[in-house]
Image (tube, rainbow, N blue to C red; front, top):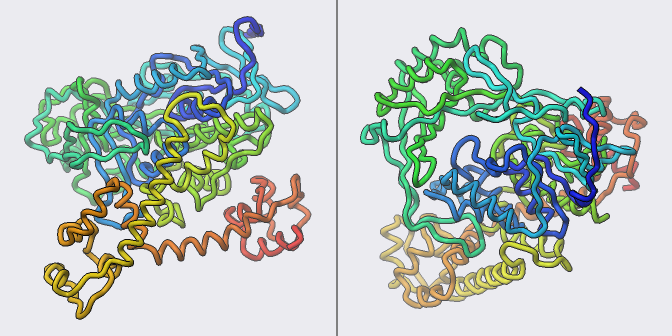
Amino acid sequence: MFIHHYSLKKVFPKYDVIIVGAGHSGCEAAIGAANLGSKVLLVTMNMQTIAQMSCNPAMGGVAKGQIVREIDALGGYSGIVTDHTMVQFRMLNRSKGPAMWSPRAQSDRMLFAAKWRKMLEDHPNVDFWQEMVTGIIVKGGQAKGVYTSMGLEIESETVVLTNGTFLNGLIHIGEKQFGGGRAGERAAKGITEQLRGLGFESGRMKTGTPPRVDGRTLDWDKMEIQEGDQPAGKFSYTDTPKLEKQLPCHVAYTSQAVHDILRTGFDRSPMFNGRIKGQGPRYCPSIEDKIDRFADRDRHQLFVEPEGWDTCEIYVNGFSSSLPEEVQFKAMRRIVGFENAKMFRPGYAIEYDFFPPHQLQLSLETHLVKNLFFAGQINGTTGYEEAGCQGFMAGINAHLKAKGRKPFILKRSEAYIGVLIDDLVNKGTIEPYRMFTSRAEYRILLRQDNADIRLTPLMNQLREGSEQLAGPSLAGRMKRVTEKKEAGKAIDKFFREFPVTPDLINGFLEQQNSSPIKQQVKLHGILLRPHVSINDLRGLLPKLDNFLSQYDDEFINGAEINMKYEGYIRKEQEMVDKMNRLEEVIIIENFDFQKLNAISAEAREKLSRVKPRTIGQASRISGVTPADVSVLLVHMGR
């Protein structure tokens, strides 16, 4: 049906940035652009589901926690919202080195969405519109605004698409399937078809969610309890509230009896009978996928997570399923502790359209249509954190493009955010992309404790001359970064200069099975020994304890990591410096890679498709060899 579009200039001004979708990616995109001074319109199909936690009620986790801290260090709001609404906090991987430590928080799902909406509504530069966007206004190869389902035409300088799972979304439960972008919400139509018509490649991906159950019907005493850290940590580097009271999570397990019941539904599973065409997530498979792929395993771990302070709704993490609802229910009741469980809603799978991210620049602007940006699951990623950081970067770069400024691009050596975007653009993805610490080659530099030192100064440079519009003061953030750096230097100096004698320290060293000292040494050398921490030494040395009492624990912990891992940090920095020399070699704009007969056909094809900006970026494209890079250097005058 043809819809006539009306440009209502009296109703809508011309915006700097229009953002389509108000999930985690869209919300961060709005803040990223608005805090830099852009006038933003956030368009969503439902104002009641802004920032909804569609899947698990948690933020952070392995590598994901680093991303949330990076968003916060840059001025985004995910960390702040999480700190205000969490019900439990844990630092994961404490038994490993600090490069692996990853913060994770359970959130109150309803409070999380309400806090996000309140912070957006408090921002003077963010407007809202509730309606489906059906297309992009494209003129002369540039995005100029959006068309809506009611026939409106809203103009803007740039457009950011953060559609999540809504583009032609299709929900599967057993043999049933129906259109929807999320349980109880309709799918978005029109955008995929238009983008394909413009020449974009698209594909299908699949994700899923587990059943929600009534916590009043579970036998908690039969499960393992999982308490939060004491004292609880937090995500934001700003002055957010500290969590005093926490809710426990629990751990349960499937069994062979559970698996046998689930197998009875395999013949009606959309995943096994071919109805689902999209590629699912490798690292968060459905329960039926787990028992099929790992048939030798007699049980799988489940995390039983509360949805909030004032609800009995429980999220069964690890039991994602698209099997018929009666099979899910029957199998669930064979889990120890779930014998009398009541289900609020079954799990389901959802298929949706995505656009392979090799079609993007590192700024997340598309190659084919200028001023059009993609962020989140539309780029083939999975997870709130991956979506949020892409949205934030797309929002920043949409603002910069609207103002005629250069894009803001984070390097792989500067942030996990830089690793994620670089991976997507240069390597692409054929399955939902999830961040892991192993994806970062410089992870000793990219720790969760130093995200503010790495990134807040970059945001300070970017926002020079911009009016402070909302949220925590950037000046306040920079003041704290300066204090943290100075504290680190002072603590390092104290340890390198403070002498300790055998009579003071040998008793403690013997307890640690560490060799005693025979003469006076500096305290720095003692700290470098395995199993020796600053907290251990504070208890032994009153002068040290008195000196450290002037500093926050965060500053002390950061200084300890820098001292203990100084050699590794220096070695990684040397590698970064070497790679950055390639990043400085700019590739000529619109360079014709097809004319380079000295490089492989695969390299020519992939370089032409990705269109790298620098030699460094070209070197990271799958299929481009060191020999190909040498040829490129010659052609760039090096």
